[in-house]
Structures are given as structure tokens and as C-alpha cells.
Length: 413
Image (cartoon, rainbow, N blue to C red; front, top):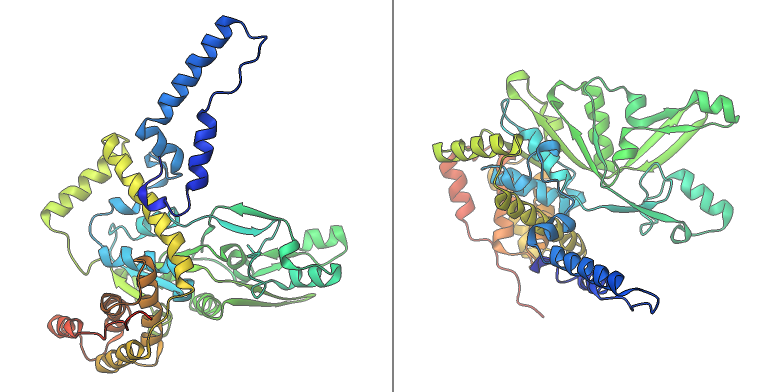
């Protein structure tokens, strides 16, 4: 049974369900007992389809067990971080979200939970670079050369739908593993130079996760963030000159007790938030402890679990629609001016604060299915400008800044 939020694109599913439950014509050669048995089976199947818990399991691919981790909707508190992750899922131009916090503050849990909300992607079949068949501007050189030699277009290639990639970068990663390298063994066997795709190629259009980024080699961190910022990887190896796209959602975590992240690296992320910023109340700590214990032992009340799954389904659907709405979402000049003025008031260095703030405002509007509003602008200031501020570091000053009335959206045409 589809949830109401899915009504914009589930008409086909309703039709399929209806066809599946309609009785098929009875063959004249069937005996009366066979007919009765088949009718009983059909009635039982239809009764199963009417059960809400079964329908939810069929509709959702989010597991109802602890095997794959806590759903994002069950994470207590951390509303700003959860919002930032969802906005990153909507708008790939955000680049990345970095979460700082001490051990046990749910940083990795939220990153992995977001991945389960990411919609599947359509790719060129057999592509190691997750090439989007609908976007000729984001092709790797191998695919482009193949199309030119065969006189084809990208839309002519066979495609397949795969789960959204999730790639974790190990702390001891080397440049060849990150960018890709020549597969010597296969090159010797085939007599041709064979390129082995790296982690960045596999992460394109997916989630790229770096745990403890403050412990990652500085050179590797610079390469990683440079590639994500540019959107392309350029590989120059002996016998190989290759360019391929890399536009993932970068999620990084760090424990400040184990070392800081350099400012120039931190500034590359659109959003930088702390999981320690707002301590949980005693009631919230109790709720969090109870949820984790029940979920980890698969003893949580089934209805509560099903409600969480349904909520996750609705969030996933919102992300799908918001990605489409992003193409038409724009800021008015007065709204952009407001964000620039707030960045100046906060003493932000450079222009990344207002640039990222514009992208956050658009993503927030698309996620809420509306034109860019004052609430979206406030969210952008909160996530992108205030954390970069060098002047307004006092909490009261920050609240005063957020209370400033942003310009409203213009009247509809």
C-alpha cells in the first residue's frame, strides 16, 4: 500500500497490484477440486496484500533488523546534522558534509543511514565509472572514444539500475588506489593497457565516506577534496592519460580529541557541524539508549519499526522529487544579496560561505517542495555562514543574526 507521498508516481504500481490479484480465466480441463484450491490460494494471497506490515516490507528495501544499522529517523537529536545530510543528498553541488564529535556520538551511524535513503541510479551497463546515460557532459574518456569510433551516442548504450554506491576511504590509502592505476597483470595478458578504476571512480554519483579525516594523510586529503571540488579526476600514468567524472556526496567524520583538521581542508566542505554542539537531555538520552538496545537485539516493537520504515520511505521519495525540483529552483538577486551581506557581517573569509549558502537554500526549498523562502535562507546562514564566521562567535550574537528577517520570495508570475 503506497504512502500518500508516493502518489505522484505510483499509479503504475497500483495497476500492477490490481492485475496480480485479478482471477485468471478458468481452464475447462480443471477439476472442481483444482478450482476450489486455486480460489483459496488467491483469497489467501489477496488477504496477505491487504496486511499493512507486509505491504510495508514489500514497498521498502530498508531492513527491519539490526544487520544494516539504525535508520536515520531513529537517531535522537542531531537535527541540524540530519538536515545537512539530506540537503547533500538532494544537491550534489554541495560537495560535502563534515561531522565532528567525540566517540559514540552517532557520526558513522548517520553517514551510513543516509546511504540507505539514497535512490538507485541508472548507469551505462558495464561502466566502472557509473556514467549517467542522460548526461553526456559527464563521460569518461574511454566511453567517449568508444562512442566516437562506433558512431554512437550515449543514449544508444545499454543501461542498468544499480544501488547507490557507498565507498569508504581507508586511512592508509595510496594515490593509485584513490585515483586508479594500470592493471599490469591484465595489460600483459591482453597486450593492451588496462586501467583499474580507483575508489573515486566507484564513488561517482554515490556516497564517499571518510572516517577520521583528521588522521588521513594531508596529501591524500588535498587530492580527495580537490577532485570532489572540480568534479573530475585526471590520471596521468605511463601509457594512460584519462579523465573521468567524480561527483559524490562526500561525508567525513572526525574526533577533535585525536587531532584537528587544517582550516583550508575544513573550508572545502559546504557544511561543518559538531555532534557535541547540543547535548541531549536526560529524556533524550533515555530514548536513545532504549532505541539502540531494542534495535540491536531485534526486540523493538514491530509497529514502531514499521512506522520508522514508512518514514524512511517518505524521506527517500522526497529526495527523488527534490532532485528534480532542484533543476528549476533559483534564488532572486535580493536573496543572494542577503546571504552575501550575512557572510560579510559574520566575517567569513573568501566566498565559499555565500556560494555554499546559496546551494543549501535551493536544496532546502526543493526538499520542502516550495520556492526559496525566508526559512530556507535562515537554514543556509545557520549551516554555511555562522560556522565560518570569525566575528559572531557568541551564541547570543548568532541568535540575533538568525532573527534578522530575510527578504521574502517574489510573488508568483
